[in-house]
Every structure is written in structure tokens, then in C-alpha cells.
Image (cartoon, rainbow, N blue to C red; front, top):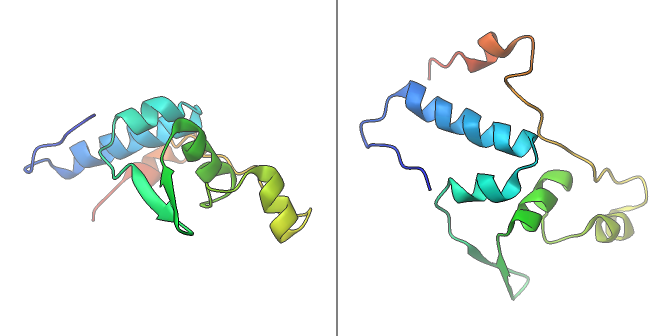
Length: 104
């Protein structure tokens, strides 16, 4: 798990977010889960559900519904339902400098 000081500046926060996004872009879901602190247990439709690397990957390819498999998504939402979303690398983009500017 990674931690930031309560006094962390914007650059430190941005660097951690970029690192996490890059792990997702490289499909390193176990490593991505290892660097964040999160509530690992959720309740979905009355069933206890846990974040795992496989569920994080499913959250990506289903665009936010990790409790469904690709097959279940297609059955529920139709064969043309997109189930192949990916996180793309921010650092590989030609406009990365513009994207990484953060004045928030």
C-alpha cells in the first residue's frame, strides 16, 4: 500500500494517480490493488462481494459493473453490448504533457 503525507502536494498526488492508471493500462490488476487502501468488501444485490484482481479487470472491461462476466453482460444488455473496455496509458499519449497539467 502506498501512503501520502497529509501535506502531500499536487505533484505527489498526481504521480500516484498516474502510477495507478499505468498499472491498469498494463493490466497489472493485482499490483494496482496493492497500492491503494480500500474497503475490500461490498454488498451487491444482497450478496457479499470482494475486490480481487479479476474483479478489478471486470470493472474495467464492463465499464464499471465488475459483478458481471462478459457473457452475463451480453445476455443482459444484448450481443452488441461492449465488454472490451481498456484503460490506456496516459504516458504513451502524444498530448501527455497537456493531460498531466493540473492546476486544480
